[in-house]
Image 1 (cartoon, rainbow, N blue to C red):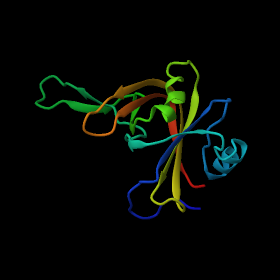
Image 2 (cartoon, rainbow, N blue to C red):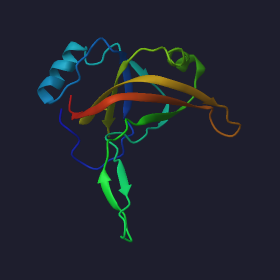
Image 3 (cartoon, rainbow, N blue to C red):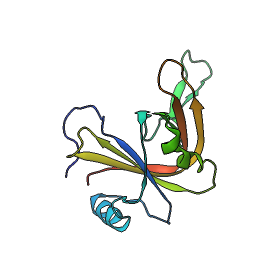
Length: 164
């Protein structure tokens, strides 16, 4: 397959995770192919189901305003970016999500795969990051489906996009 090459809605985007077995994240397409073959193409990974909203992800900007004496406008410099916290909103199904709830603050590091897809099969863009499951909050709703927010803390940079 190849990377996505046209405009589309990522309605088939998935989030999967595996316990970190000291995986070295891929750095290019060749090491990605090795990574998915060693990790079993993420087979056996846990897929987070019923996601309603994916957050933006990647390398956030960190612009610092620096005041300059005697100037009407401050200057801006690039600072060190903070690793983003990611929040996924999902339709809450206790029977499906209880296993994920049990992993909150378990102290383990996981490898997360965000696989952006516009169609069920075909081109994709896979991104990887290591992190932990920080929280799982449930929001009962009287007029819509019950929802939950899964918060993931990241450790290090995102790598990707890679095509399967």
